[in-house]
Amino acid sequence: MIHITEDKFVWLDLTKKCKSARQTEELFSAHELYEVCDDGTDHLIEEIDTIPLLIKKGSRICLEVGHLPIKYIPKEVWEDTDKIQKDGYWYVKIADIN
Image 1 (cartoon, rainbow, N blue to C red):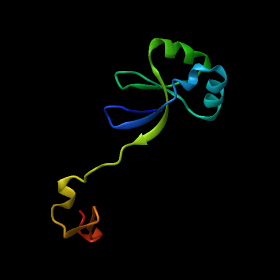
Image 2: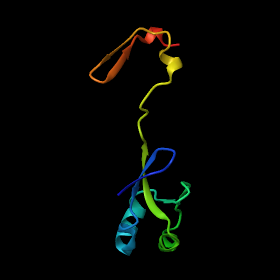
Image 3: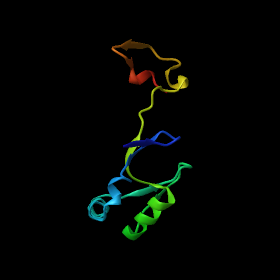
Image 4: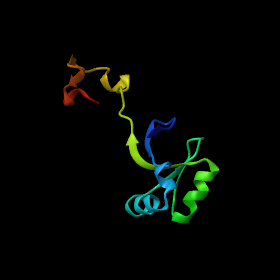
């Protein structure tokens, strides 16, 4: 399941898979797992033994995916450039960008 925090960071929620000790061990040995709280904070999980406690506390056990792409470029970057839009993409001369 995908979880997106307010800062538009994407997490893969592995909480349900971490209810099995075997799957938790496999995930923990292969990936850096994070506790993601409801307030949007995240913490690297350093000990596998803390995972069941974090789940009981109501935290999500997640894997980093990354930030959502920026949907726009701030106006000041484009302000004095010649630009065209084609097939949903903006094209601009690199020499024109300040």
